[in-house]
Image 1 (cartoon, rainbow, N blue to C red):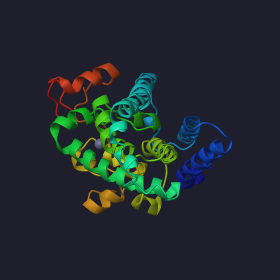
Image 2: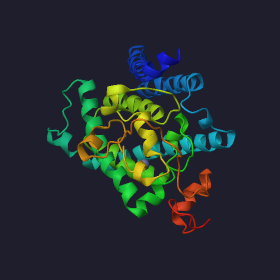
Image 3: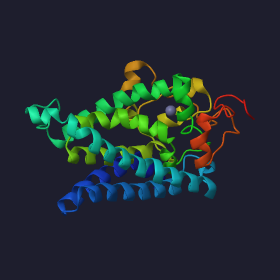
Length: 294
Ligand SMILES: [Zn+2]
């Protein structure tokens, strides 16, 4: 069973997620329901795989971490994007849908949905690559992004641990351009299913081997190094869904013959609760990568 999970977990979760999404649509369920059902079931499947074949037994979260990650997931990954999408559609989209009114469009709406989703993923990942790299190399943005790097363990739910400012800036790069282009909601829903499942998987504590897929997708074997405590290791593998932009710009990193060691920030006294982490980028005491403020 462990061998099956090691090599099959990622294709199983992604394939079932996509098929589940298509099946829900075929059954006549609304687009949001058909999007969230495979995401929730995929998360449950990943939890089961983590339990059966953990990469590190010591990475099991305690109740305090689970509670905080759940708050981040609901507030930052659930409510904030909904609010931002709503705000955008109310204030911007009407004015920016000039293309439709003028009878032309930059986006290839006539392509099959799967091809449009692939194009969106490549482009969104390119934008997110640039943003993510700046977030590591430019101190003002790093102070917000450090929240995502604060956990000392990796498991599926801490994909949601982002500062609201960091998440809001990400929205400007990976969603807003496509909303402005008037991308179809069925393309966006398909993208969301893959994006969410890949995000859970990227942070999961499952002992997987992706082989050649480590040159295509940004999976857990690569992403663990991105969460290393040491910047010379963590300033690599910025890819969100795909790893192709890291290959293009020379930041792909997967050492052979050794495993990642400590995760998190150098400052081991960095605060860990939701409300503390929302406030900490604006205070001078807790420097993420030094022991200042200890
Ligand atoms: Zn990062």
